[in-house]
Image (cartoon, rainbow, N blue to C red):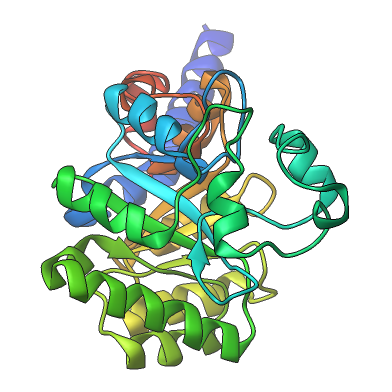
Length: 295
């Protein structure tokens, strides 16, 4: 009898401890989902195509749009003649990875290309590279699409030039499209220059280039009303994600292509994910009912 009583007390204590840990998190309201945050999946570099990543190509966009994705991250660089193009990096190794070595002269493969050289070098001989004008046209043709910028050049001068081109070229086509352009910033200092060029509706703070503490990230996100924080697998932690949720900010983790990892980070409280190959539906039921209890 004494053993049964002891067991019951221990069981009650365990349940009480679990409730003490979980109940405060249940009381944290879900941040309001609007704009691009209505979607949980972000197509990384326009999404993968035929097991190839980082193409930022028209065909990758179409394939992933047809899979149901509506938020597309795109890598952006300035060409040698100062035109804004969708490319992750310049360099011979990257050129070979995209199968463009046959169409670009060897001495140019490790150089910064001109706009014409970039546009003429089809990826794997078949996929169409995009510049910003092409992306604006896609936004016009697909009115439910959001574009997340990943600007690969980050000096103040480069940021000024890149976002000035983004705003001017988009306005020339249709100013309303800027409501669906979501800049990613890489540090707190980048906020003011970008917003001075144009007051974007939503901004993402991505953490892979910053050494800000979790506390500093949360404070900045709250102060500037950042729409979302994006973090790597190694930076993601339940405490940061919960604190962001408390100030109304959703968390995305990059770049995830494994449904089991999706489930792991959902249990941690992550809201969405950057991906090469998964679809919006792949996030729906991975984590089970308990993940919905956690912030």
